[in-house]
Amino acid sequence: MKAVVLAAGEGTRLRPLTEDKPKGMVEVDGKPILTHCLDQLVDLGAEEFVLVVGYLKEKVIDHYGDEYRGVPITYTHQREQKGLAHALLTVEQHIDDDFMLILGDNIFQANLEDVVRRQEEERADAAFLVEEVPWEEASRYGVCDTNKYGEITDVVEKPEEPPSNLVMTGFYTFSPAIFNACHLVQPSNRGEYEISEAIDLLIQSGRTIDAIGLDGWRIDVGYPEDRDEAERRLQSADGDVAEATSD
Image (spheres, rainbow, N blue to C red):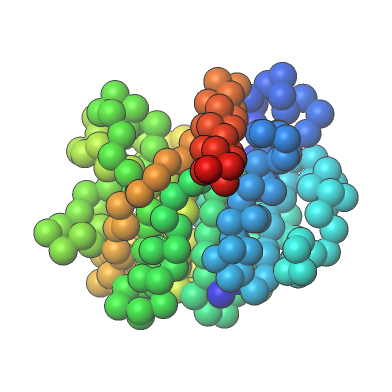
């Protein structure tokens, strides 16, 4: 399965950390956020990476070159920051089967393999890792509703009044049907082509999307304090491993 990584963001909320580098190249626990993402995708069996780059893209390309840990890398360029659905369309010509998608500003220590496994079962057209967050934080994310079978029935992007506190986490698997939906998306009130609207179009067309509950943790590195929290958690996990090894 190929793996798409969305890494075109400028990261204005992360300044001054992003004054001379794109968001994905900000270091957490000694290595760029993108490296954390790529390592996990390699462990999940990624056969090829497709990295969507934009702001200061040469910093990403110069750092990773044409492969990472033996997995080839293809780059696509999102010339304007017009949303995730817009970014995803830049990879369409490189994808012809089910694929993984990760947002390149997220740090995960979680059950990503469960999402991939669900996609491989061919029971669903897409699967997302979702988590419950405090209600006051839900409006920062794409908010989901699900039915009794754990299927996603509705997605709303950054709603002022969230219908639930179940949110998408930034790791997905899709079939190529997502591209048809992305082509139909219209700009939102924010002027962006939202992935949530593309997902909603999939649902309306009768596609099945499964929600996989997060087991572990993830940090969406949007602000400097998020980076600090992700680093703290990773170092704590490393300490736990070292302690267990010494025992």
